[in-house]
Image 1 (cartoon, rainbow, N blue to C red):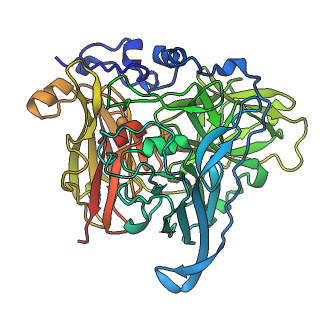
Image 2 (cartoon, rainbow, N blue to C red):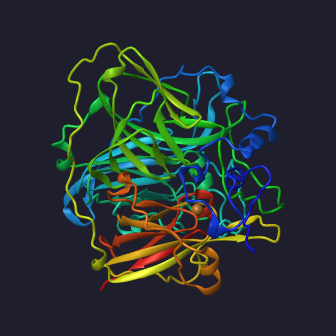
Image 3 (tube, protein in one colour):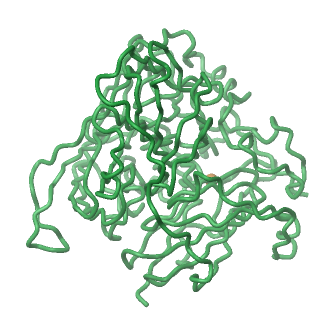
Length: 549
Ligand SMILES: [Cu+2]
């Protein structure tokens, strides 16, 4: 009987237990938002807080004393020839990986972080669709890591340098040699120059570390930032811009009373990896409980979930509805009105909030019981109020009949003899096994993600954009015994705000999530993985290779 339970001292989330999930996977309740990890403070969050004498209690800090920072727009340091067209010159950026002291809150000492471009989040890279750029990621980090490495994880052994970095542009249609393959890391003193053609629709992407075996630590340390692609199709909509458009990277971190980052470890000697990390502090653009002055008018927020493993469910505390106009890979067909916005790690949401009815008020932006920041709405707007466009962008849902292949791929959890998680796998196959997924360039495939674990996993494919077809509950025991799918529930269509182009999709527990993927762009070797970074670092990642037809 597989009553899969996991418990790791000092961390891990027994969310399923809290929510009263039945012992039988097949009978587990529908994957409601309540089952998404990290939405509420859990006993283990409190354990984390209690276990370390120095854990910070954010409620002891004065809230809303720091303004919400908006990351600077990165500035090019020169021009270089376009690798795909040597007659064209394209901007060249240099982004050092660097240890930086960051002020998280006015009343805390600065936190040691590892940043890209000297701030957390890093400077925002911005471009137009099909306007390429070169970025030199220069490793200027110290020789020793300041977060705890588990040397038993694949690729993080004592035979490789402790400090390594390789950067991936999440959501970018990027040639394979510039995609930041996890094993292509560089050590301090070395750098890597990547070419980002950005031949794709306007969207909010993000860059972050992807180093084999320590990506969860590097990203947690601060190595991430945002990347905005714009295009004419979006420009005609006259969406709020300039100071009325706010990129917002939201993540959680475990902070100590001295303001420093803490990364939890398990009690298992030599194998300190933990399956999930949830922080006591929710950071908005790197600040704890900031405020944001706005005018009583329409604003555009470009929100991304930059957490290692926490899901968020954002809302305005006064219950005001807002509009989602875009998801991971750009605009939706039409705005979707929402009271609450669920976001898995690495998902992005483009939202419009109309503050015009809230002049003079203070309204908190929250995720369930966590306060993220406070909007302070001024009494008067200086210009136009702005309007939510009724339609955004026409595109077709991809016909299932266009798929040339369907792959059935399981999401698996390995447990030890006391039901502790030893890590997750994709299709029961470790990272280093030969490549099994070889889609043909410019062909379309359906991937059926058969989730046999107790958790929701945000699954991300590099290079491509895809659409979610549907999700459906199935009998996990029957599948494990007979290897065949027996559905136990109706076909569930994606949520209205999941109907756009995606690059990361929630695969909910006990469900088959089907995505349809056109493999366009480039031939070559890429990866797909769970975007819970603890899972990704411990085998929930596989290479795939796009092959020429
Ligand atoms: Cu996962």
